[in-house]
Length: 313
Image (cartoon, rainbow, N blue to C red; front, side, top):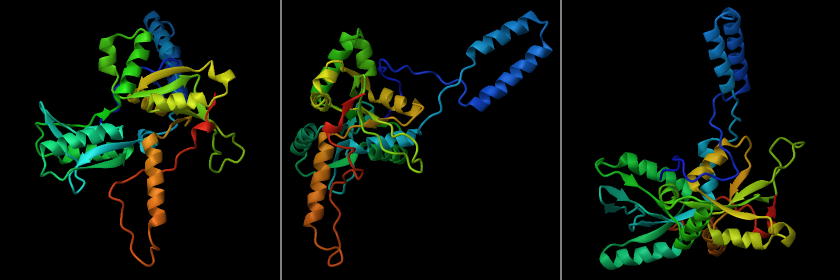
């Protein structure tokens, strides 16, 4: 899955191209420019070059988290993958590539599984739920292990048709053309302007630091609407639904000077966590009998809180 390409921008959140990444680097460059000016103070060409360099001198905010840490926020987004009986993913040969769909919607994945089983009755296929961050790493491993390099492996994240239609409608209302939407919108992610937030947590080893509220992104429009409905009416009226591609969201998370953003868990995530909790309760004492692993991996991180905890920023 490719998540680094720039997609539909997030309106209201400017992205500055970094020129210099630290104040120390800026100071060093300023000292160099000063020495340059002293040495060539009588040269008009040198002065022009110095003036141009001064305009370009800017400090980009330090990254709050790395790309790997940003991807960990996708642990609360399970995707459903078609595999064989041993859990090995089943890519589909299409044109000149191998396509491994990663379904955000369980119902869509189950429908595709039924089609596959009908076409191949002898194939013991099944669905496996895997956190999106783990599946991203798995796809990279499969791409490296692929013997036939003439057929590259691609793993698109498949959103629901309803979310895709809603995102397209919202972007068209913003004046974005059909062509740009088709080229730039791969995985729609929804949020509000201003952002809704979750109560912040106290940073480790910083008892005096204020707890920062976390600004929330949603993987489905239905989840966004459910959260908006729980906001007090006075604040709800000023919330404007927005949409951006997942790649733009990840870029914003990485480039933010503080770790301020979270991905709200999907409905399937909550269901998988509850199912796993019930299985753990039904298991016998581990000292009496070894535990058997669940056939479908489920996310391990805990949800940040129920929708009622959301509030307008």
